[in-house]
Every structure is written in structure tokens, then in C-alpha cells.
Image 1 (cartoon, helix red, strand yellow):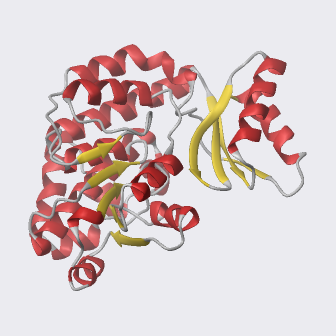
Image 2 (image 1 turned 120 degrees about the vertical axis):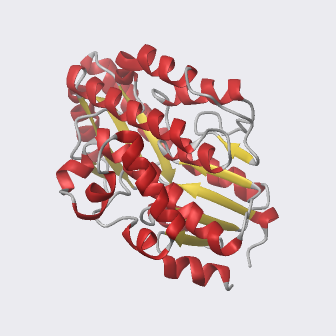
Length: 315
């Protein structure tokens, strides 16, 4: 069994969604099924159907992606607790959207309030994408210092903004911003031998100043939500520090909208604090893959189906 003192729960963000996610959990865990049923009722929308048998395009719409991933993470968490009991890790963290999942998992916001918040976050981000169109690109085999310089050069040359949006792991970063600046940055990246740039198939410039278009409305949504002190240390994306009071949580979530996700630093911080086991709770295994690129000696566990939960509980 895992040692809670050396365990961190981590929660995925957008990009981890896939058709069928959470179905095994709902079929085998009565409590997980209740989570999906409750989400359907709160949203007045058949989220279960979308997750299990909907179209990929519909699921990939950020308005749907965000509540779907959040609900799947909460279902995985409660299915895990059905077997392990109220296991409380020493730390928790979430990648972008996953930060709200982490906060809900650690008792800082109710399931319902968290679900309504991620639904609104998705709605507003979609609006921002329609009114301030931009894009994102994955950058491979380039260090962050060099990429920051390229983003500054591109922004200066074009008069538009692009910046590092995700520092995921060594050799994998994501940039985000206005299309003109983004395309120029991509050109500059591929001029470097062995470096690659992959334009992502989205029209939203997440974690960039273009999200400032909806920042006031999102702030209203955040500050109208009820938060509590989390029951374990949640590490924030923006400053890579504990967000342990309602005030800190609200400031973090608002800042995160336009600030980079410092995931590599988050994992390195947790490793330095003595974490040896990371449990990815929710859809897919993206974060576990990033973990292995940050530290190959650390144990990563993926919890997105019943067999995985049984296997973890027996170790």
C-alpha cells in the first residue's frame, strides 16, 4: 500500500480526454456511477453519454472537455476511495484545468461548485477563442531559456504576443498566442537543428494574454464560488507554492488563466519534498508520461479504470 507521507495525487488537464473515459469506473463502482449521474443532473446535459459514446469533436470542444475531465477525475477518486478508504496524500497538484480537480479532491470546493466553475471556464475560454483567435504549438527538444528568447523575438517582430504556456518536462514545452506571432515563433524554432514544432489543432490560446478577454468574467465566477482550506497541500501552477487558503486559491485560479503552467517545476518541487509515488487520477496517462521524462526513478500510477485501482491497492 502507498505511504501517504510520500504520495502525491495529480490530476490531468485538457488533452487527456478520449471517448470511453470513465465508463469502466461507472460500470464497476456504484459511487463512481453516482458522480456521473450527479454531473448529468447539475449540468442538465447527458455528460455520461458524451464521455462514453459521444463524438470526438463534441468531446474536444473545450466547453465540454473541461467538465468531462473534471467529472472523470472525481469518479476515479471516489472509486479509489471505495477500495482504499479515505486515503489522503501529502500533496496534490493538477495540470491547468486539473488544478480545480485537485482542489475539489482535497475538499477545497464541493463537487457541484467545482463542476459549475469548470463549465463556466470552458464556456468563457471558447468565447475568448472566438473573439481573440490564436493557437498553441508543442515545441520539442528545445530548452525553455532558448524558447523564451524566440517568443520575445517573434513578439517584437510581429507586434503580437506569443509566450511559453506549458513547461511540461525537459524537451517538451508548449507556446501560445496570436496566430501571426505563433507562426513566426514556429519558423524560428524549426530553424534550430533537431528541434520540432507541432501546431496543435485548436483555436484557443490558453495560458496567454489573449485569455485576458474573459478575465473579468472568469474572476466573477471564481469569486462567487465557495472555497475552503484544502485537507492536504495543493501546489499551484503559477508560483509552484502551496495554495492553502480560499484567498490564495482564488488568486491562483484567476492568474492561471493567462500565466504559464509550470508543471516540470511542480514535479521537481514535489520530488524535493520527498514524494516517491505519483498517482494520476482521471482520464489517460499524460502526466505519468511527463513524470518519467522528469525523473525516471520515480513511480507513477495511472488510475482510470477498476483494474488499475485493484492493482494499486494490493501493492
